[in-house]
Each structure stands twice: as structure tokens, then as C-alpha cells.
Amino acid sequence: MSATIESAMVMAAGIGKRMRPLTATRPKPLVRVAGKPLIDHSLDRIEAAGIGHVVVNVHYLPDALEAHLAAQRRPFDIAISDERDRLLETGGGMVKALPLLRGDPMLIVNSDNIWTDGPQNSIRSLAHHWDGAAMDALLLVVEHASARGHGGQGDFHMDAAGRLSRRRPGRVAPFVFTGIQLVSRRFLDDAPEGAFSTNILWDRAIAAGRLYGLAHMGQWFDVGTPAAIAPTEAALGGV
Image (cartoon, rainbow, N blue to C red; front, side, top):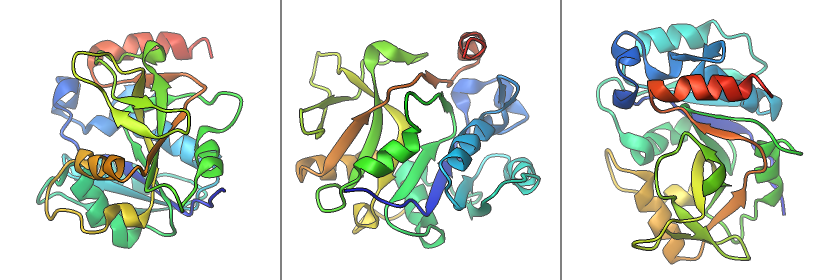
């Protein structure tokens, strides 16, 4: 099975508390890493995958982010999902943006991660492995030992078929979520109202056996704090 991805959403509405003081005067997606704002790294990958429509949600210092996006010269159009009055978290942000998103499945990308492709384009690999009959969401995951800048204990276990399950108590999970996922419109059916985390939807999909993962074969960097910027730039300098 495979899919054509018609649209992508870049999650860019967070306040960026962990990135202070750099976010005192700019939204986190505009913090520069390796010569350009974080969000431009995501947009570059979306462009390389050939996706024609992008939605970006905004909340903190939205005018600066919207001005940056308006100045983009890209082969796709960009729509804004406005959360300036109320931050809706990851799940609520997806629900609000759903009328602006096209096609099924849809690519959802966090704006504070940087990745390099392995032997194949990572987004196209997700599309190639998509099976709408079996999956509600397909997450790009990276091995815990290869997750640069990530200080957690991992997020998921993955079985031989690619089904994901949560990290077990007291254990280190072998896979970390990269912030990149394909989701079906069905994934958002009967979602909670208002602000909520995508974790609620993931847990529902896990219970139904419909949350899957795909191992990322390139490099991946969690750029969530100022301290993560220099090591990321040093590693990218060798790419």
C-alpha cells in the first residue's frame, strides 16, 4: 500500500519556554539553527517531498511568524491556522486545522526538529509504507541511541509488524518519536473539544492496534533548548 500526501501541517504555535531566552523576542520556529530558522528546515523537507499545500498554526508572537511565512518563495501555498486567542496543544491544533488540510492521510511535522534523509526521502518513505486499511497514524521514529539532543527515556516499543506500544514502566523504550507523522482523517474522529494532547489519540489508536511506526534511517536532532543548537550545527556541518 502507499499514499499520496496532498498537504502537511507544521506545528508552530508553542510558546517555546525551554528555548528561553532566545524566545523572549521571537517565536521558537524563528530561532536560527545552521543558518536559517527552525521552521525553514521543516519547510525544506516538505518541499523536497513534493507536497503542494502547507498549514502552519500560530499563537506566540504570531505576526512575526506570519510575516516570515508570507515572504517564502515556495512551490506550495501556505495557510495559517490561527490560535492566537487560545493555544490548543498538539491534538486540538490538528482538529482546528483540519478544515484547511487537504487529502487523506496528512503529514504533521513539529517545527523544533531537524532531520536528514537516509537512503530515501523520509516523508516519501512514510507515504510508501502507509496502509489506510490498517493504520490510523504512522509515526516516524528513531532509535533511542541515535536520537541526538534527546534526554528522555524513549517513547515507544515497536513489534515486527510495526505496531507501536508505550514505553513500559521502569524501562527505556527503544524508539523516540521524531515529531513527524502521517495521520488519517479518521484519527481525529470524535476527538476531544478544545486543547488536548495528541497522546490521547495515540493511546486510542494503540488500543485499536492501529498506531504504527517506521524507523528513520537518517540523522535526527531534537532542538528544544539553546544548549542543543551548537551540537546540532556541528553535526550538520559534516553532512
